[in-house]
Image 1 (cartoon, helix red, strand yellow):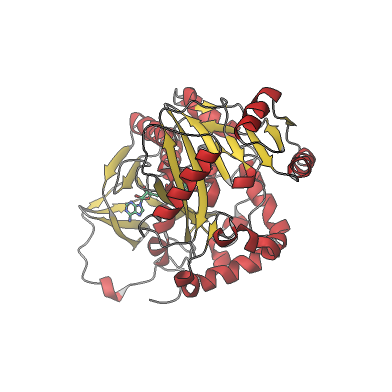
Image 2 (cartoon, rainbow, N blue to C red):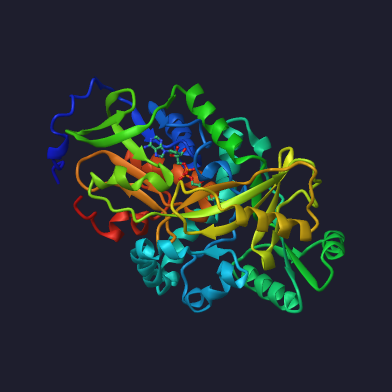
Length: 431
Ligand SMILES: Cc1cc2nc3c(=O)[nH]c(=O)nc-3n(C[C@H](O)[C@H](O)[C@H](O)COP(=O)(O)OP(=O)(O)OC[C@H]3O[C@@H](n4cnc5c(N)ncnc54)[C@H](O)[C@@H]3O)c2cc1C
């Protein structure tokens, strides 16, 4: 396919430079991991972001959980039948604001369709998720920052009359999938019981892991990429378009003509991909966190409060509690009521603090089938993408970088990327 022409931009100046760099657009965890991996392979990389690495997007504030146990994409027939129980109006953590329903309708329709294909969609996601802790460990060791990863698993607790049944069900499912599961240690269970009287049942998922600070992981990857000859520049990318066999990248400060480009701009990726015939129906699935600098951790691994839909992660110098799945517009102000509700829930679970953290909200970049989009644009343009990492972007960043290294070099990818091709969503509607 020849590169499409764009009459609306026919007056744009010719690119000022022709260079052999690969531009990577977006320095969240996905872009940072790709930058390091490509630099390690000897490519000249230019990482571009309007902000410092992992400071502006979802990567800054995630729960730090390397969720190797989450093999299945979220949309399922079971969820279609029971999702109402997860809504905030019913005490759950999913919020679909009424004013967003019309805008979300096409996304929700695709989500519903994907629910009928969960079985088909699981293997491509599982292939990336299963080795994630090993790949991250190897990567961090390569760059001399193995200290950022803790391989201690995580604990999950259920509360109330049905807690033992729920825990037993989860344990059975996890064992069937080959994961190491044990009852939570009696000492930890006793502490949790003392804080929240009633029936409590807990499990230890041995194979997961967590990082001590997601932003530091991204910063370390970028530092390593720069040490390997790459560059990081703080610039907004305004547009990209095919220019012969190259990619023109117009930023707030310059116009480049690079050898190739990788789009990994989180929830803001779609407009950059449109010009290459790619439709990325990303939605922003927002999550919140609160931090406690002066509250001791209950354990050296994350604690998931399954009945409360929240996770408390011991991070360097603080605890971070994350919750919610809010289908609000990216960039809309945070909902103060959610932050207050999270604070109250944590207090009830025994987490109190003398210092006050105001809370944080960030947008998970989510495609309706909950598979990421990883691939190369159709036609001649050397345009690659890694988008839509939903709830799993920290987990999937380094496996994605492995896949991207193969794609860019024309090698066979270590994962089957065909189900992750964005062309599964058709072509963009003309603007
Ligand atoms: C509350 C919460 C908890 C989570 N917990 C976990 C977890 O425990 N484990 C897990 O694996 N995942 C988790 N996630 C998901 C994970 O954080 C995301 O999937 C991941 O951060 C996405 O990374 P990204 O690099 O694709 O996007 P982002 O981190 O959003 O980064 C995109 C970057 O692109 C830049 N950008 C965008 N447009 C432009 C432009 N035009 N020019 C220049 N720069 C641009 C932005 O500034 C940003 O820095 C969680 C997410 C949230 C919100």
